[in-house]
Length: 446
Image (cartoon, rainbow, N blue to C red):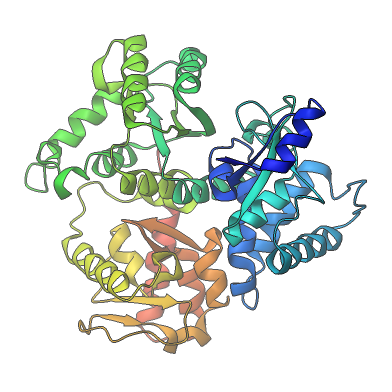
């Protein structure tokens, strides 16, 4: 971090802290301030997709409502529209003129936690700019706990936590298994905050199916598959054994843990295991970044959790899994973000164990897509008129999709509404009956 020569000299003569220049995105990612990711995500998506979804505007407005109920004295703002307009005006100004140190300096505490300037930092992070910061006295942390105390909706908080994990290469998912007592959670928190900090925490209720399916996510990233998990032939014996050892009376507690060193993560994991003295059955922390993202997509999306709990752990998904691999490879080769596509049609049936699906159809944000060699993987844009929501709303609003192996899939409710409108006889009417029966079959928690 480089200091500014003349400004630093003037501040030194006046006995004020020195100014530093810091990459705004780096500062955003090392902060536990929960509001930053809301602002950054709004900027990163709203203009692109506002023609088809209000989700990102709603996301931004929900965190402002929780923070100050749409009132700020200076500059005076008294409504949603005031905050939105001022935010965009600031973004346009900084984009044109850059960050003006003569007008404003970002203040941080001794740990570079932001004390002021959350909108400006988010704007500069989005624009890829560096900012001028000065150390200040510590202020209360506006972390996830602050926002929950102010009544933020969990739906939006979960989405923000997922976005942080996707954006932050130093984000890990700590899974404290239900066999461990919640009475020791404060000890666990102290350990995590010693080596990094807790960005988010959520209690997770799992069925037996859900727990076994979770093992296949948590331990399936070692060289592609982990043989001790088992397979269809032995009914996933290893995953079931590990599940039996980790199930208890508590919910699973999931933490988003920000830590700048894998060595520190390993030390934290060892100290947590020393609390419970039951080996690796007490806690799991991801080794691979892909796993952290997939766990976040599972834990912080209610539809994903529902699917994890409902789908049989011994379901044969070899066919659809192979198509998913091909879809991912195609997207990677053509620089298409996975977040901009959502599997549609009847493909959720195959994931949930309702019935086989012959192909993998998907919706996509772009109007056109590159050629796909496999004819069983295809755009579903021709069926858009039957969906009750715009494709941007389906792809970007988490109420309309769940995740499986890093890919979004439309929910059964979205699929059911589409089939009601299309009404192909007898296929769609039969499928609606299958959907209703599946949804109404109770999910029993462990």
